[in-house]
Amino acid sequence: MSNDIVDNIISIAKRRGFFYQSAEIYKPIAGFWDYGPLGVLLKKKIEEEWRRCFIKDEGFFEIEGSNIMPEKVFIASGHVKGFSDPIVQCKKCNSFYRADKLIQEKKGVFVPERTSLEEFDRIIDKENIKCPSCSGELSKTRFFNMMFKLNVGPTEDSEIAYLRPETCQAIFVDFLQVFRAMRAKLPFGIAQIGRSFRNEISPRNALLRQREFTQAELEIFLNPKEKEFPKFEKMKDYKINVLLKGSEKVEALSLEELIENGIVEHELVAYYLGKLQQFLNTLGIPLNSIRFREQEEDEKPFYATYAFDCEIATALGWVEIVANHYRGSYDLSSHSKFSGKDLSIYDEKTKEKLIPHVWEISQGIDRTLFCVMLHAYRIDPQRGWDYFSFSPRIAPYTLGVFPLIARDGLSEKAREVFEMLRKEFDCFYDESGSIGKRYARADEIGVPFCITIDHKTLEDNTVTIRNRDTTEQIRVKISELCDMIRMMK
Image 1 (spheres, one colour):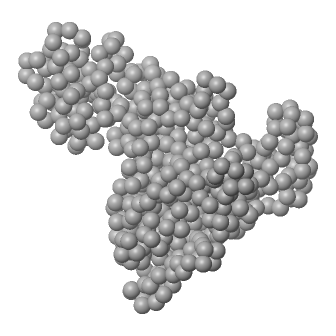
Image 2 (cartoon, helix red, strand yellow):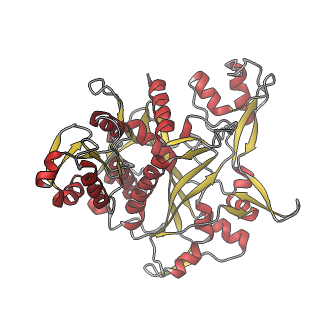
Image 3 (cartoon, one colour):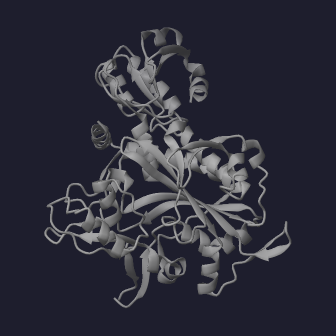
């Protein structure tokens, strides 16, 4: 059933213009997807909600860094040496697979990426794992660096650069510029929403594992000695779902309990874990489908003191969509060392010079969008069609405007209402087919409200508003329509 749901969503996405494989009229390359008109609207609204929650509400700063950066940046960050996945190749059909994912899919055994090559080979031999495509024998495991390497300049020996595998390095190398220009004071955050590029071994599950994708990253710079955080007090009783390392049971712990139990040290960290869960809930993800899985020692990134993967329960199982890392001073210290620039700053509160520590929130926007679609998908035998129940905050179109019939002056009046509404809301006009078919088309793409202009409209300047989820209709004066929709939204 889960595979049917995913297939249905991908089918609707392609047919109605949410997303589809890039360059599909040719033989497409796996891991690259294009967004159609509806997908762009949905994606941008999720991004704007993220901006509102993590930048505007918090008074943080946003930058836009280059997609291409010098090799030295990634030597300093550790990516040139360590940004690799374990891969195996079939000796018969030459297909490549990630060793850790292959073992997990075939035997249900989780193996951390940082496991040694010898251990991967031992497990594959012991479990007699063969090529999924042709049952051929697999090669020895080796590491493959996932960055896209390129030359900047007209010759092959021009300067080496890379497409960035994550957006955060621009934040770290621009840190001092932003700190000085914005006269920032600790703690403060620098955010970026942009494209990242990873040469994934085996892209799969549509938007969940791509080679080009969008990240929303927030790096919060703090003084590690400052454990208290003013905003924590109002949120301390808020509970998040946590799967602690070594445990198999999810617990609902308050942010205060996270501090008291020593799970995290800083109130700031606990606060932003809570804020992240609230954000996902506003996108339409139920609270019981969100968990923070504490990473084990052998799976967390080398730069992280501790880390939590925020995961969403879906028809495909638990999907990681946000990585939360305490990066310490690793990045700024490393860039300071390799660049020769002093990246330390003066903390006016504690009257000391220091290199700040970093709490990172790194969210995959494409993964988030796909999980939102998975949770919004509804199968309704009574209606006779499936539909998306998107939150009105992020639905691609907020409104559909329909004349009951395309004559008797109703089309002209409907156009008038449409022109009024489109100045404020994302909406579309449709007069083709029966009103029932138009409701079905609107439901399928997740339109929360449909405005219908009928003969009564011409008499008293009222219209009906149909609610997608309940199918109930109310009658409203045209002069009150915008206020009503703002309230319902």
